[in-house]
Amino acid sequence: MNVIGRLKPGVSIREAQTELDTIVARIRTASPTAIGRGGVSVEPLRGALLSGDRKLATGLFLGGIACFFLLESVSVVNLIQLSSDARYQPHR
Image 1 (tube, rainbow, N blue to C red):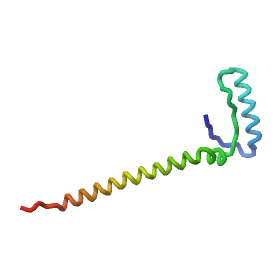
Image 2 (cartoon, rainbow, N blue to C red):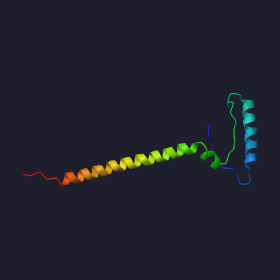
Image 3 (tube, helix red, strand yellow):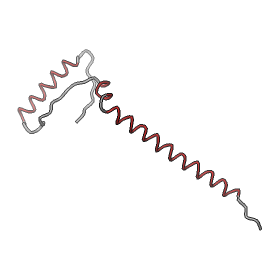
Image 4 (cartoon, helix red, strand yellow):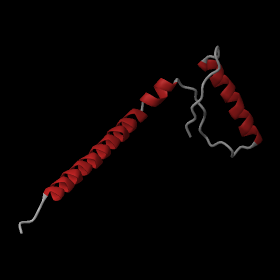
């Protein structure tokens, strides 16, 4: 699970990490199965998001743009077809 939060002004990453480690230790003492084997780490947002998730975010962004252009292209083709159908008059 990933959680994003903001540190209180004046609190360092090291202090936040120490406090989180204390909280996790208390939870494990109270209920050993509440938290799995994993731990908790405090990282700067820039470092956390731009590492492994950057490719995923870029792919999703580009995929969204591709879908948008596909839908817009279909809309333009439909408008052109409607325009040509409106101008068409059969010979009598």
